[in-house]
Image (cartoon, rainbow, N blue to C red):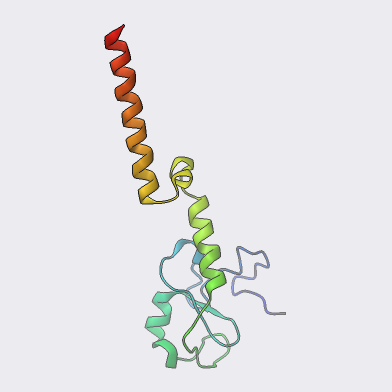
Length: 116
């Protein structure tokens, strides 16, 4: 069984760049993998020489294979790390709608106080 570079068998430990050992949950951009499944962050992928470079773990060509599962896990981790009101809004559009609704509610409350 392959062990992640950091020696951590947990799901979190499996999301490490095989070169710089960065936690892939905190990076942006594509996550590449070689044919053996060793992960590379986009920065290391570029520094190593891209698809033609050899994987530092297995010495096989890295190729141009994106790991969509790792990217989805990263995106989920980043989403759940956001403050609750941003995660609930779900998007910039949702955030804008939420802020506009709050402003309307404050304005309505102010109108009610003036009428009283």
